[in-house]
Length: 341
Length: 299
Image 1 (cartoon, rainbow over the protein chains, first blue to last red):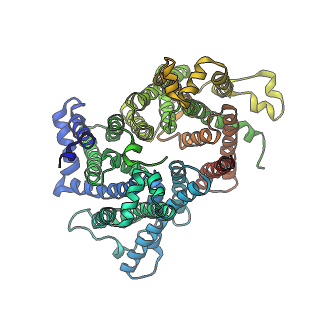
Image 2 (image 1 turned 120 degrees about the vertical axis):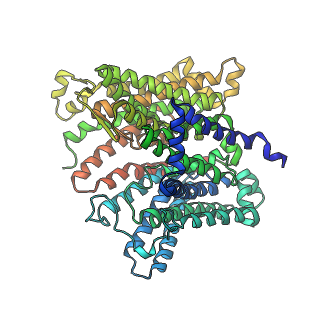
Image 3 (image 1 turned 135 degrees about the vertical axis):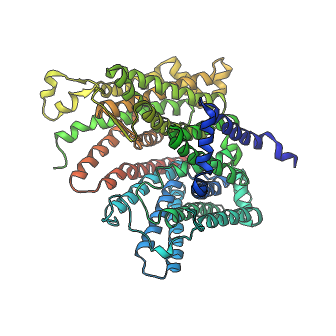
C-alpha cells in the first residue's frame, strides 16, 4: 500500500483539492459564492443540477477513457474531438433515417458511431505509419475537417428545416437512451461506465492489455520483445477512437436527442477529457475522480453565473490553471506514459 | 473569375497572421521548445489588441497591449515548461484552454457581451499607402494599402533568418535546441535562451492576432484565431524552422485562404472551404515527411 502514497500520485490529487479550496477563496465575498457553486453543481429543485453534473460527467468520462486508452499505450491521440463529433453525427443520422424497430436503431447507431470514431483515429495512425506525420499533429489536424463536415451536414443536407437552429431532426423517440425517473440523467452513464470497466479489465487481465501497457512504458522494449507492434498500434487506436465515437452516440441519444451544431465542440469536451487524464497522471483508477472534478467545475461555474453573477468561463480558466500547475509539478507526460512522440 | 486583383489584394492580409505566428513558432522550434500553443497565443493577442485599442483610442495602444499580453503568455509558458520542467505538450494544452477561457471571461466582465465585441471606438491599424506604386496594375494593390504589420512580418522573416545565422545570440538559440548541455558547459543558461525565445514567440503570435482583430476587421469574436495557429505550427514543422521556407509556406496557405473565400462565392459551402487549409496541411505534411523519411532510410 505504501506506494499509493508516493508523491507522483499524491501531487495531482493535492493540486486538485487545493484548487477546489482556492477556487472559491480567490474571489471576494466567498461564502455566498461557494454556496452558489455547490448549489450549481449538486443542488437545484429535486437535485436537478446534480443530474446535470452527472450528465456532463458521462460525456467527460467517455472522452477521458478514449484519451486514457491511447495514452496508456504511449500513443498521443489528441484527435478525440473529431472522433467524438463524427460519432455523434453518424449516430444522429442513423437515429433519424434508419427505418427499423427502436432497439435495432439504437444498436446500429451505437455500432456506427463507434466505427466512425475508430476509422477517424485509424486514419491518423495510417498517416503516421505511412508517411511519418506525428500522430499528435495528424490526429489534431483531423479534428477540423471532421467538425466542418458535421457542421456542413447539419446546416445543409440533414438540417431540420422547421427549426431555427442548425440541427438535425429529432431521433426516433423510442430509440433514445432511457432516463432515470423524473430526471434529465440517462442510462448512457451505465454504457460509458461499463466500457470503462471493460477497458480496465482488458488492460489488467489480457495479453493485449499487458502488451499495450508495456508499449506505453517502452515502445522500444515492446518492439524488442517481438510484440505484434503494428497490430497493437492500430488496435489501440481503434479502441480509443471507438470510445470517443461511443461518447458521441451517448451525447446524441441521451440528453439532446439530436445533433446540434457545435454541441460537442463548444464545451471543449475533448480537451477537458485530456486535462482529466493528465490530472490523474494517466492512472486509470484516478480518472473517474478527475473527470468528475471537471464536470463539477463546469456545472458549478454555471450555477455561480446564475446566482452570483460570475461569468461561467471562470471555470475554464481555473481548469487551465490546474493543467498548467500540474504540468509544472508532476513531471513529464512522456515519462509517465512512457510514450513516443 | 477565380483570379483577379481583389484576390491578389487579400493575400497579404491573410498571410500575415499565419506568418507572424510561424516566425514565433520557428524561434521556439529552433530553441528546442515544442510549442503547440501558437493558437492560444494568437487568440490572446487578438483580444488584447481590441481591448487596448478600445481603451486608449489608438491602434498603437492596441498593438502595445497585444505585445505585452503575448509576452506574458510566453513567460507563463516558459515558467511552467522551461523552469518547472513541465511537459511542453501539457503546458501547451493548458495555455490553449486558458486563452479560450480567459478571452471569453474578459469579454464578458470588461465589455458585458459574449460571442462578439464590436464598437466604433475600435480603430483599424493604418494602412501604408505607397503613393505611385499603387498605380501599377495588379501588383499595385498587392503592395500598396497594406497594414504596417504586413510589411513588418515580411521584414521579420528575413531579419530572424539573419539573426539565427549571423548573430551570436541566434547561434546560442540554435545551440539551445541542438545541445542544451553543451551550451551550459560554456556558461550560458539554455533556460534563459528558451525563455527569450518564448517571450518573442508570444509577442509575435499576439501581433498575428492583432492583424486579425484590428486590421482585417475591427472587432473580436470568440475563437477568432480559428485554427490559424495550428496552420502556422504545421508550416514550422514542415519547414523545420527555416525562415525563408516558412515565408513561402505562409504565402501558400494565405493564398489558399484567399482562394477559399473566392470558392465560397462560386457556391461551395463555407464549411467545405474552411476545411480546405487543414486537408491541404495534412497532404503537404504527409508529402514532406514522406520525402524526409525516405532520405533518412537512404543514408
